[in-house]
Amino acid sequence: MIASLRGVILSKDLDRVVLEAGGVGYEVFVTAATSARLPAPGDTALLHVAESFGMYGGGATLYGFFAPSERALFELFKEQVPSTGAKKALEYLDRASKSLPDFRRAILEKDAKILAGVFGFSKKTADKLIEALKDKLEAIRVPGIERLARADAADLASSSLSQALSALSTLGYKPSEARAALQSIAQERGGSDLPVEQIVRLALKRL
Image 1: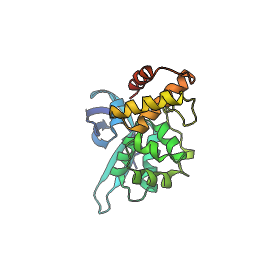
Image 2 (image 1 turned 180 degrees about the vertical axis):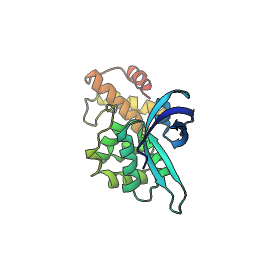
Image 3 (image 1 turned 90 degrees about the vertical axis):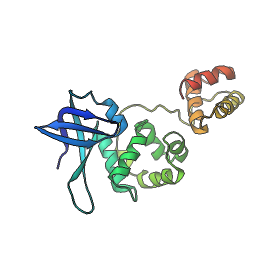
Image 4 (image 1 turned 90 degrees about the horizontal axis):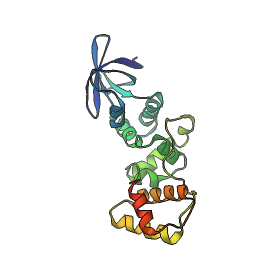
């Protein structure tokens, strides 16, 4: 079983790389986030790898990850979420890669609204992920820090928050995303009552 590959990147796209190791070029499927973090073709890289075999035979398909924790999350998607094969598991990981720490917290806190509004999962899929992973993600640590403010974070004055949320919604932003940005501002500003216009400007920088 191939657990990792270190070699020269021959080519790189958004969803796959060809990496030469030991004189052999391996096609490895990756998330867009992993692809963006890898060096340009011609440079050396290390990928943590998971193999997947088709139900009806054939060779192995390789999936690559920047960190072991990403591979572990991919395996959880594939093995624990009903009706999820390797391609779908990589798609889920790609969405979760917007912020793995916040995705993990949303699962543990059973927050389907964050999964749908920030990570783009349908409500049905968000509920399915929570049910499948709520008791599994506690043991997995992911790199990075949480970027979304908690629901109990310091809040802006209710009238200002409400008006800013309404303005952002009018501009076409999803309420869940706008609310997360506003809560982040509230946490940073210690709940001070800022003018609505200033709140909106600060929020737009986060959206």
